[in-house]
Length: 137
Image (cartoon, rainbow, N blue to C red):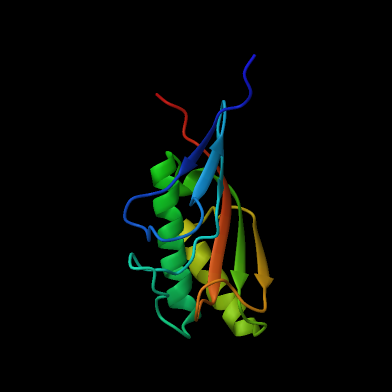
């Protein structure tokens, strides 16, 4: 008997210099666990320093690219965790609003956390997700 299948996902088009995989999927019916999607461009630079909304938008774009590369989609996301490097309510709400706008009317359950700092210089937002992989047709 074999154990569950494990595969790692590293989308093309996202910054290749990160020291981790963008996501891991485990089967047989595959759950996907993403690393924190950061507001990085394809050169590894933090976009829009100081702008929580713009960074949230880039992080969601990167998250959606990871979902697609793994065979998932925003509609298959089971849960997100949104980290914002701020304790200001306005910053937290701005990031939350971007996340929910991009997911649409039926956004998945989410956790919102204000944190002291994140991993890249001038990074204010990071988003993790757990999703299903679309079954093959």
